[in-house]
Image (cartoon, rainbow, N blue to C red):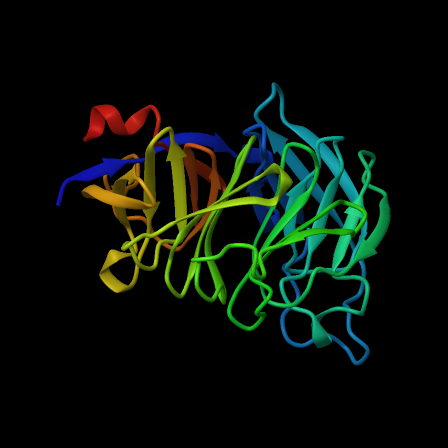
Amino acid sequence: MQVTPLNPYARLPRPYRAMHTVDSTIDAEGRAHWLLSERPPATGPAPEGGGHEPYDALVVTVGDGAARETHLSALVHPRGLLGALPDGGFLVAAARTGRATRPGEQVQVFDALGRASWTFDVGDAVEHLLVDAGGDLWVGHFDENPEGIRRWNASGELLWESGATAPGAGWIMDCYALNVGRHAVWACPYAEFPVLEIREGAQVRVRSNGVRGARALAVAGERIVFFGGYGDDADRLVVCATAGSGVAPVKATRLVRPDGGPIGRRRVVSRDARVYVQEEPYTEWCVLDAGATLPSAL
């Protein structure tokens, strides 16, 4: 099968690489952020009553000039998911609730000075957590939470949920892939794997899709590219064209590292026409741009 190489995108500066990476993400403007701590993330269950001992952490931002530091105080999630707010603040969320976190403290919001501001809950089993350009939080849940896909503001107010607002989408029980762009959000959920296009005013367009198991998707005009799949298809790319109420596969390739090697254990973030991929030890982001890379690669 033909291969498509990733391109290098952003790298954690060397002075910070001795620290422990808790999480890393790409924001709506394309900046890369690393959540770092001096100590390894805690393992094992939280103490009775939920929550872990608070600790201080550092966010390093790369992508708009010199690397920028933001020191976060009193962080309570040792393995939290990081989101970057447009006002310079951050949020850190626990993927699991129950004993993992105290009620009302699943999402911690920090201001631009790194001070803990307030907390709220978004529900158990968080698969994806992405902040849009306006500062709202999009959460995709995995199959232990039937809520599917939901949108919250940074104050913890629920603004939208997939529920039954997408007729034809089938049962949304696991948000496999979520792309939060500047003007729309796309998702590809289990079990039927439809492509959901969500726009302002809760307008949802549903397209049928035969590509199973993708963990990321990029959207460039009338082209939708799926990355991932089951088993040997973990590094598969499927390029599809939108066709009426569905998407039609055009070509399949395999995504590889910039040096041509196979991609190891990874994180992925989908933003508009781009899929960002980060391998262990999570110090570097690479990118696939469906609007720029693929026309010459396919």
